[in-house]
Image (cartoon, rainbow, N blue to C red; front, side):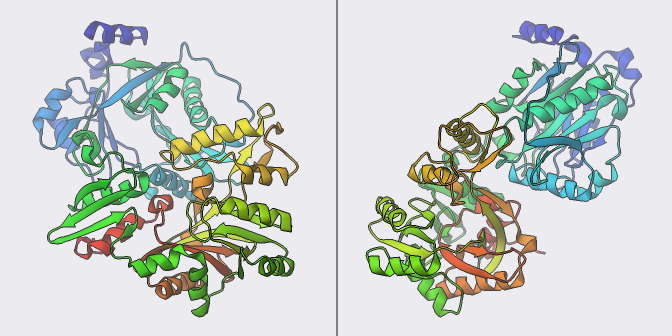
Length: 577
């Protein structure tokens, strides 16, 4: 095994030993280097002569950040200096040799690559990192160092929306610590889980590789978790090869899954349940899985024990839950509270819904009880369309409602303990043409990306409603879209059917905030996700179309939904402001 590792290092261009330990070369570099990276500090171990001092430096890690000692020659010696506080990181190291790297002409794509430019870029970077459960950066530090030659933040920006959909940080070793091996490294690569464009991660890696190749660097390294198969496949595709380089980190709440092996008993929970469980465990609350497949778990602290199904807990009464489950009852109660809601008619009353269709011009058909957007058809304008949609909806519930169609942005507001915690606009799924793939193939690709980003929770169904939506725009599943042509493939924006979600909490109009909190009180429910249709997020006009008794809190990062949920369940664990 050792011979194989040394052989790999030799193929990568230098011996494994010379990576760190050649004394004459080490003498030419500065000693005990610490590099501030925004998300934490990087300690290039080849500049540290004393393992004990390196260990001491790692123990000075600031709260909320992650420090990394990389290229550690003798990790066992460093860890032995503080065995209860340090651990050997279970990551693999890979190297891209620029002597053999070949640039590739950029394919047509709907995004551009650029450097960090504005304070808004820093905020966008943090939104990406939080969405990917990564350590956010210190905005002031990153902004102050934006012109640094040592650290480069590369961004991918959507051409149409201007949204930052990818980020990667590059480190120039020569600029930062006069590296005699003339290297560079790649850190903190993240791609928006909702990005519609393929190849963003590869483009960012190539951007930094070609940036450092142009500077005359010899190689670029990356550290990646040993079980991150998707990332490893990308790096190997680009020509990276494994090298025997080790990292040491501090035992902290951020790194806990790495040095404990995760909570094996909690494996199998979906992202919505796991987000809450992780927050509870971090506070010292005991967690026990009751039914992982369906998201049930029990949280216990002292004499208090509460069973939850994701964000639905025993604190939600059966009466409140039934009010939300029956969409007719929901709107009746909200209307009685003086809140704006659409008109409804029972699908069994054809005369009633025909009159509603005539008066409103378009309707929505939905099961009376249902979730995840199943059985919903939107913007129906003919009686035949409505009849067909009613038949589809009855596959999910024998009771079906026909509702006035209200145009507007699909806004989800999460209310916990009768206070708004998060708000996000949900957008229907869109595919982007490449000039040679059919709409069906584009949907398949988009579904694979969405499923990978959501642990299988989000896919675009290839069903009658998708076909109807596509046909209404003059296309079919077999149509080949021109490059960069966008096609909305469903009218609903539910995340489980491929929709995307975009945080707008800071922009929420006070009237919408007040309406959401009033709705939660009218339904007497402590945790709910309210679906609004609004003309503008920062305007007062709205209608409320649904209330969800089990909102997916994981969809609302970076807002503190899990924190507020655990606050509700175990108030004594609430952080003191």
